[in-house]
Length: 425
Image (cartoon, rainbow, N blue to C red):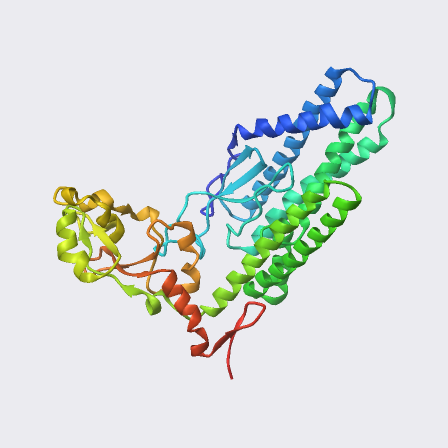
């Protein structure tokens, strides 16, 4: 494992195998051994076809694993912590320690999750796409290129070996190499298509960033390219379905996914542009008094909850720090005859399941956290109190986010179709 603090890396990252991998291997084995090889190289015994199917599936897994090993090496060279590689139903997945970026930071410097996938490639070209786990477009592009190089080289070598293989005894081996090599090249081509969550998108973002120095411009360029890619694949797939067969549906599916992620990225860019310059403290609703975890539900309702007319309450323990939140609906759901005995702790949502933010954080940087941790239905705003202990000072819910977007024109900011905000003159 490699870290930015200069610790010595291990030779190989940890590799975990999920049961789904064996399902994929079985599917590829049947596809090759029962359908493809008997049709292209007839007259061979069934054991030969079965052996060829197993060999082809293993070779394909080896290529995908090799691509992720190359990605892991590139990530380490960029100073990124590699947590491991997982082999599953959709191929291989490279795991990296999450960066403290706008989507994974709680606001207090601690990440929301332990591990996030940076990239991977699946047997159908639909493995885990490159997500912005590093927060560095240039590093993401380097990692993407490393994986694409492996799949492209392996595909070309196998295709050449299959095309040049002599007939007779080696015809079955040549056909197997040709099939696996073609599939590897197809995966490479699909990964190269620019979209917000693809290797090609990461490479395009890095190029735009080098040219303009503007991360927002790079993200917008990738989103626009993804829309073009999506529509192109959909049109191509529809034509192929009528002219070739049902294989065209695969291209339609890939196009639909690319189009969806690109539209989502454009929406997020417009939202970020609209909220630029707005901070959490500007829109948060002040929080009511926190509830002691040891207090009975009946006492909490009578003394704090009902008089406050709020719906989300912080919960503190004996030592004083915030340990979670409780909701009005959960308190009200406690049976009336049990409220004098039940404690607030019984209906407390732990803080690690709640989206949190700091008052001084930009609203655009925290807006997406609610989707990752929706347990409380709001973003809980946390700040250090006079005693130095963190406490709940406010909440930001969907209503506050919507209001911030609706009032954007009142502050003289308009959002252009490309997703960038500018001031009215």
